[in-house]
Image (tube, rainbow, N blue to C red; front, side, top):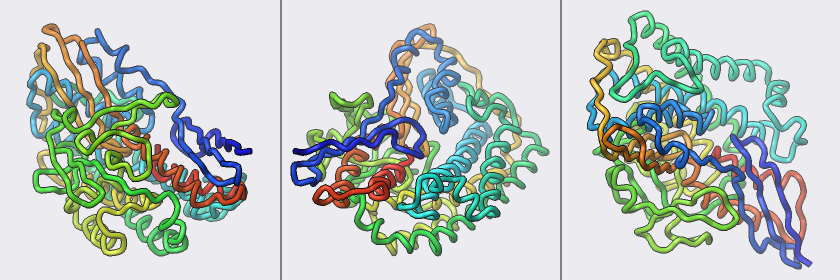
Length: 447
């Protein structure tokens, strides 16, 4: 008789999920899926709220990437009310976007993913965690904690709240940056850049080469990808056009406000989460090889872009593509792409803080509530984040649609689990270390 293996909870992810693996009567994998056991409901309970409250409400959706919801929401209200924010305000928003990415990347790579690579995927769970890393390499562990704290404190010292930000507002930003604040942030950003460079070299030389067999075989699925780029195809995370790339590398670009012509949302009866898919590519089916499935997040962004905007990150992208091609389909290399983006965000923050206009006091435009529709889109660490609002003539919310970064990966994560399980489990033989390798494929997405 067949049986069902349940991994619950999936460990070292930012939320709650379980894995269901169905074995046939020979002990081989007949099916497998990942269920995200969470219901948010923000789209409904935001209706009737004044639109200017939205940036302070939606940052509660996620405690890991509140700045991205905060910024996307402000952009949506700006668009609905036809507000053009001053250039210094856009620079401050961009700076917060880059700075908030940095502790997020450090958190995932070192605290959540690295224990598998440093301690080994078959290590006892009691040591396969960040505390195990601290014990094995105290100097590195303390440095990691210090760098993550530094990234968060830079934001707090300038913009106030880190977890539930209020600094950006419809029309721009609440306060300009002083010269003293610029100097403090620049010093910290340069320190974070050095740590990003160190982390990239550490991973390339001492971590990923040991696991190439795992990387090339476990969780590998063929999908399309989504990400944001500038007009000339450069990697972008604050503003630009959305690029959807098929598995063969061909792509189409479109404006964020046109997303409904390209993306549809499907719901499986066993899942709480919506599963977006590329509606122009065919009909949705949760099956390996289905052409409508695409992925988001850092690997997707470096696949869809033509180039990186900063010199160190561009050199890393060229090296990555020389090794793994474009588009790269190796799921576990999301961890590599995450470090590449760590370098790029640190470089970008340093560059912004060296621009004279960053301290210009003109940071807020006049705002007049009105009826309209606005789509705000930024790249959250986990993928393309879309906030779509409609308001009445008094500026109250009448309709909300959200596509959150992780939901783009809801369908591909299940397919990744299925491929990993079918690759690893044969004739009913499995153990704790093998099941953890399936979790590794999920953790690569940082869901």
